[in-house]
Structures are given as structure tokens and as C-alpha cells.
Image (cartoon, rainbow, N blue to C red):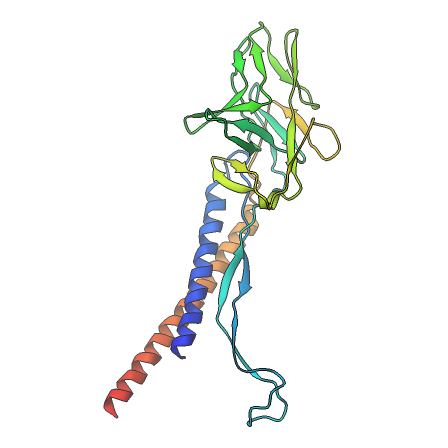
Length: 262
């Protein structure tokens, strides 16, 4: 194995270490509400072509050419937006059953999309704007819904109508044409990008939008069985490339020693 072969093995080590990180992150968030797992997709890298196919090289009459691959790379690691399970929650815990996102805004006016529906304020007669409390930060539902504090439980219908006593307001959902193109910013939040397409707004139950499940939280959509299979495969592939790299290194050192003896 040449130094070039070691470089190929090194690309495998890099790619499969990234796969291990992705799968590990998925498994770490198996109990995180509304978490969406990531996939990882590979691609072969550019080829060296000492002799192009169809060109005679003097050694063969078939003209098959000589090409060497430079290894493997990560093409993308898209988020898989398949539906997570619907789990029992508390008052003002709501889940989207189907497509769509809640839009929330931080204190600086930055807009984000999320599937997390653990809204505040909770408790009978609570008052104030519906918001998410994530990692010590407040994200207000957009368009805003301000609960008046009537002495009644807050409920949300499948069509997204929020009611507290005589008060009612409508939740709106957002969807994009290509959710895979959304940028992850952490804390279960996503940002629109040119790859995701423009946002479309609608009410729950409309065509292309999901419905709302009240007193419910969407669970993580990580499939533990397939994740463990991916983990085993990535670990084995990493080990194989590691051994190939070690073998290549030993052969290079052996060649250097022979050259020094000559």
C-alpha cells in the first residue's frame, strides 16, 4: 500500500468517525421531545486517471484505462422529519400530528421554526404570551397569543384554536417545500435557508398542514434498532480503515528501511 493508499484510508477514518458522531447524537437524544434524527450520506471522491478509458496504454488492447479513487467523503447529513410518537403531556403541551412547524421569535426578533410544543404559561388561569422556555431563553409563539388569565383551563383544538374561558385565538403553522434544507441551530430550533424554500403559513387542519394534539408532546423520532445497526456498521468500517492505514504505514516504513540499506 502506497502513501496514496494511506490517504484513502484516512478519508474513510474521517467519514466514519463523522457517522459515529451523528449516530451517537441521535442515540443521545432518544428521549428528547420533538428531536429529529439525522442521517448521513456518503459519496466517492474525485479519481486520478493516469490513462483514460478508451485510450491504449501499451499493456492492454482493450483500452479500459487506469483510474484510482481518492476515497470517501460525507455528501450530506440531512434531518429526517418523519413523525415522532405522540406522548401524554401537561396543559398547554401541544404536538403537531403531520407536517408543519411552530414559528417562534426570540427577544431580539429572530424567527425560528420548531416542532417542540411545550408552551408556557401552564396552570389554570395562567396569563401571558404563549412561549417556549429553552435553555434559559424565551421564544414567543408567532403570531403571538396572549392568555388573559381567565379562571379556566387552557385547551387547544385539533384545528389549533386556543381557548381559556371565553377567550379564543388561532395558532398558525408554517411549512417549507424542502425541510431537509432547513439549518439546525440547536435547542430544537431551525432556520429558513435558500435550500429550504420560502415559508408557507396556514392553520392546522388545512391541506399540507398537520393537526394539533392537545395535552401531548411529540417524542423523538430516533429508531433505536436502526441506530444501533448504523452504530455497529460505522464502528466496523472505522476499524477496517484504521487497519488499512496502519498496514499502509508499516509498508511505507519497510520501504524506507529497504531504501536505506541499498
